[in-house]
Length: 474
Image (cartoon, rainbow, N blue to C red; front, side, top):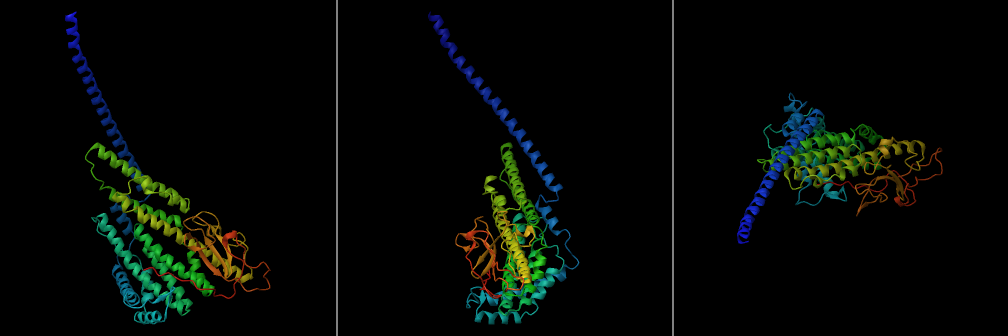
């Protein structure tokens, strides 16, 4: 009995060691399997990224900073670069001098409620008297072929962005001076001059847009928005004949989707250059994490493109970078905010464009017939003009005591009856006075609102109804 007991006690340690060895062997096998899985997944994700980039290249879109700069300089004129630069520098010098005289922080404000006060008008006249050819110089420069003005191929993403920002700042200075000139024409009721400045601002906006990336496009849209706000004033207070040529040009503007798709593809190339600096890629695990980041980043832009093609703001606004990658990475921090701002500005500008086109057509028809349509459905306006880019519904027509308005629901997608302020962000044009009664006019009166909340009953008389204040963004 004693002998058997001793033998049994000796077998226990061996059995325990055997289990440990099997456990270690199992861990080793699992580790090797895990390593093999990570290796396979890394290779698969690498191949998937390569396939995605190949498809992007086949579509003609850039996939790197070098390709982005090459695409930006393609087709740019070199022969007249010196003359173009001379025109631009002359316009910029004049714009800086005008802005310095009218935006002197130590002098009294030149604007009161968006219009020149007496002191401001005197200073504006003095400033533009010193630069009588300013608008003409900008017009000549905007009409000249763009030169190949891009940073060197070896530029870092930061240097590239700094270059674009520098270019956009100079254009914003010129736009600000043009805005001051437009306000002076408005004060003088020189409608032809005002129309000319608006056209120049729209050409300046188009000249800014070919610069690559969301920052440049946002600058172009900002200038276009200021021009459209001035056109709104001209449409309300000036003769329709002066506004009509601008409206006709606006009706031929490139579709919103095309403009935004080009911007998104450019910004994707810039972001991919930043993604190359993803921290650490010297192990399978880090390489796998890096590949997952790039794949998700590409999915983010793929989803943006898909949302843009519907033409509705909500389908783009719902695409959040944080749902795909960490918003703290350089690629996300340096692309997502500017993209989001540029998209929001683009839809605002597009809504304003459609509103002005619709209002202009209704004004033209009502002045000819003496009758206002009861709703947009009755108005002879192209369907694409009447579609609200924010919610996809028809733009709203409403009446006010001072006249009728056309409006969009804006970014919050809530119909506030055309009000703007507080929590409301409806975008409205008007009010426009009803036409004077003619023999053709019926007794239908002003157009009825398509939504009961859109306004109160009433009418307005006279061409000039109230004052539209034009914002001058610093």
